[in-house]
Image (cartoon, rainbow, N blue to C red; front, side, top):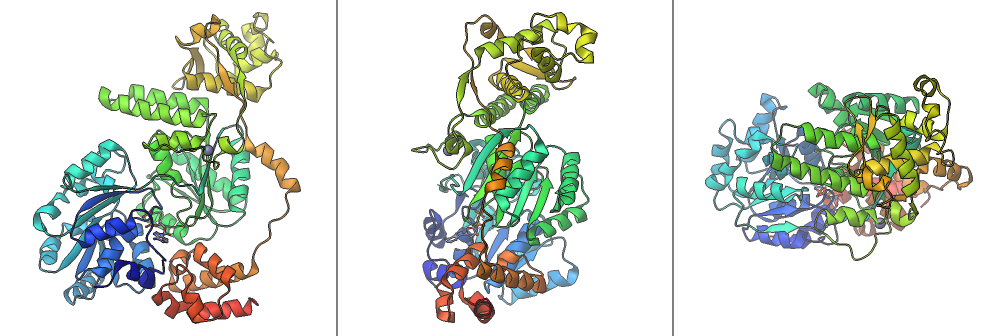
Length: 598
Ligand code: ADP
Ligand code: ZN
């Protein structure tokens, strides 16, 4: 039996295990089952792929999405591993081929959808063979608590009964306690250990801004986050917005596409494919786009609306920078989103207990968005992790927002809302405060109010910031189901009476800041050797019809460009270059280096 660390080096080209990987691998090698909780990009796949290749027999990996399986299989084959994926998209012949490879004991890792695993006597077939382990990927699909519930996952309980001696390793990026308990219960893992990886993803720079001019903000963000390279994802709240945003980006000259649950499954698959394979692609999607994004080189993730919990936000932004290279996340949100989230929970038919949980998650999300101090600390606290110090890689750390005493503006705003009869949205309230004689103001005689013009001293965006923060703090509500009228709550009373102080954060909107920055920023130089390698990789990937990163990841190419090896031996020392890839691509890479004059 090969030693796991050696296999890791030989097959995957990695120098060593990361974090909990070594312990998990050793545990499985000894026949143990368990549950692995690691953030996206934490390195879950190796936890089962390494034991699968060290132990004799066939490893079976249950995975919920075809695209995910196929990309994993493509990546494994590049490393010289006999892997296959069995799912409903295959025709009769392809399925037959896989069964034959199984019968001949040629296959080492089989990815299978939960439906397929439980169909056509598959379990029967497996019970006649030597099975090294079962891995259950995206294990949170077993739980009704999340939004990825897959009823077929429930039947996986059968594995424990039918294969009592075979290790079962469940893996997920969800850390929510309830879901964790559900997984352990459903997959009969109550007595097995839970491996909790650290949740911090320090390479992702996180930022949040009020949504002032969405498109200008997105444009500036895309520019600073990707520099025209690398893939990105924009999460939108509605299907319509995914399509509108994708269309707009096309006009801006980007390779963009939309993805949402309402699309035909063939269109979804096509979108997935394009995203997996494209170079600087942008996916505009609802949160239905998630599982199955295997690309390690997503450089940025933006949200145009407030997510409903820190858990979902973190999972979504966690899709950026899985390769460990710098990545960026930007959250845009407004007062309306906060109110809408609250109203949705209020009106939902869910049980009170469930609503209470959802409410507390939403409020935690609001607090992160509105935080004036390190955002990552606030975020990780939601996962039970305490950072020893501020992260230095969030907008609040980079540019600490100034706090100011906003009690008087808050009073003015609340009083304008009350005096206009709680029947108007923020736009009109700001007109009144700033003393603008609009038709609406004239029509309602609001120029006669004592509050008319008392807010001339502050610009519109500041007033919007005051209103949003009052909504976030619970002193104002927005009638989102109506016309967005502002409504003071009980908590507005002590503010009006001067019994409560209101501390506000000065908002920073980076679109304008970066517009200034653009003009005097030096054009960042690019490395011609790295570019030559990328060009070669793109052609190679196209010829083989696989995603570029399964050939070599950016990180590996960057390292090759830096080291400029002149022999196969020194190329083999570069992390990410395993034996199989060395054999396949070694000569070609050396040639590219030579041509590029390296
Ligand atoms: P997850 O499934 O947890 O989201 P992956 O298994 O896809 O994460 O791993 C994320 C990235 O980290 C991949 O690009 C993988 O190659 C890399 N990686 C994982 N483990 C190691 C390791 N021990 N050494 C170097 N790179 C690793
Ligand atoms: Zn920070």
